[in-house]
Length: 207
Image 1 (cartoon, rainbow, N blue to C red):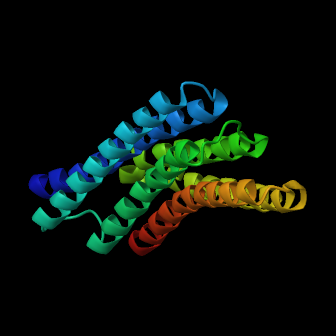
Image 2 (cartoon, helix red, strand yellow; image 1 turned 90 degrees about the vertical axis):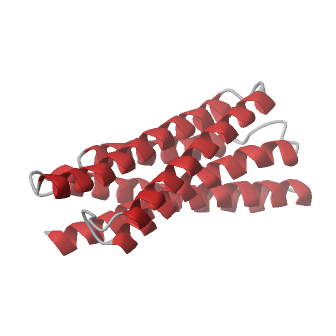
């Protein structure tokens, strides 16, 4: 039984570590949009953090392939890991496109959306720190609700940003640029919600 417990704890620890790395990537992205200077250097830093997240995802999947004992269904661990990785992939995509699109000035909604994403990422970090305690307290359920609430706010902001973009932007190139950037940021926030929703399914199965 001790060996079984250690194997279960391994996955909880790996997911918590992954969440911590995502927090660092989210903070770097928020710093970029909050202080849009030294863009190339900051984007390079985000790419380094995204690579670290890829490596952590690979570490989890390697452990999954090598283990007969998991704390919950293997397909759920795989799905959670993939969605967590997608959070950072989308942020790195936006950061990279700032350079590719030669974005000289950010729109105010960009910072608001980035702040929203960062809030969701922090809530997920709390969730994963307490995931092994799901039968002992309500922290995980509370974090799931909070992530969903933040994502709903993000949806409203995303639609508002697109509406304003199409109403006010007369340059078609700028319109195309920002439509893509807003969509990628929304994808990152959606991935946060997807992670929470998968965990919610796990909680229901093992309650």
